[in-house]
Length: 557
Image (tube, rainbow, N blue to C red):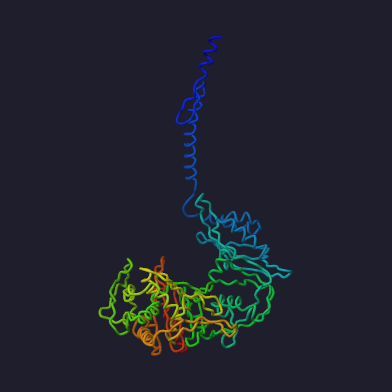
């Protein structure tokens, strides 16, 4: 009995604290706790090793030809077979892919799809699409070309299709959908100013314009809707003012008629001129009325001429000059500083090749496009002076133009410090397009803003935008003198040769991040014609956009 009591007493041992844990040191219990610590360290080591091995297993670097073709073929095969979930799983955005591919059959009513891959070009694989669109017993074949790009997923190195809506159809932007049904908007037949029919086949640049005309006037022009396969724009596209687009007409509607202000002669010439550059846009208008006579873009998918939002470079100096002249900060024939550089707001601004004009006039600075002549006046201006000038005199930056189709009406935001100075020379936050700059030249030519329009306001009794004031007679006279001198002796002289004397012009070059060459701008008027153009990544405006604009001005005015 005594021995048993002593053994029992030895087993009533108090817990011992080990590293913040309670260890019951009874028999093998203590070993169990220490084994727990040892096991944790081992587990961490094994996990680290596993992670390292997994990291080594993640493939990086350029995709091989086999990886690209395998991923592309897997996607195309699954799509063709109607296995939407499997096709979407081969993309890097399965949710978006599932939604659009499901709608391809359910909403667009496209069946019997055959997808044929073309020759791989790096990570890109083109493919052709053949199918049938069927709606309420009416069927039509559908054929088009598209392309996909394969990328490597960062997490595990797996090759996947880089998902964008344009994979399904090149006219789709992310967020858009394809829908077949009775069109809510009847078709329209658009006519030029002489009564001739306008078609995208005849004038390729006008495809987006025709879409806009239909959206605006289809329900009021007297037509009847048909059945169509359409691109229905999503929120992002609508924010960019993109119109719905008809891809296939299953049954014809009855079109209404809309007459435009376009000149068939000038439109044909503009179409031909923009093909001379890789990415050019141009607009021609009549200053006395605001009628748009021609609009053309090298690239036809987006109407840069009407809806582009680009820094206008030194063509903005037309507006800035009117402001400086109005405020008495410059005078055409008076001396004006044009140093090599000028620092404002912590930024050091340069002239092209750091040129300077010693003892020169403001007219000389305008003609040679001296940046520092304008930057040097920034400290004498209020932050909103340029914005007010653009809005109140030139009718810009108020988002209220009503030309008959969607447009971007220019933007001249209120800015301060260095950005304010940059805005004076068409950089900073200032954004324009050829339509805006053609309107600027028109305002100088006539002395007052006339909102451009493509469809007469009498067609739908819409109200055109107006400007609240005009330049003083002195400012207008001097501004015309500046533009005429530039056309005769300045940076625009070569392009405008032989077009004087009733003319004026301004060139521009706008630097764009990531571009080796600047966007080249040119705005000018001659007689009762005004035009403006831009060549993106083309270089100096006088050499690129200048010849395009001048050739169109030679045709009239």
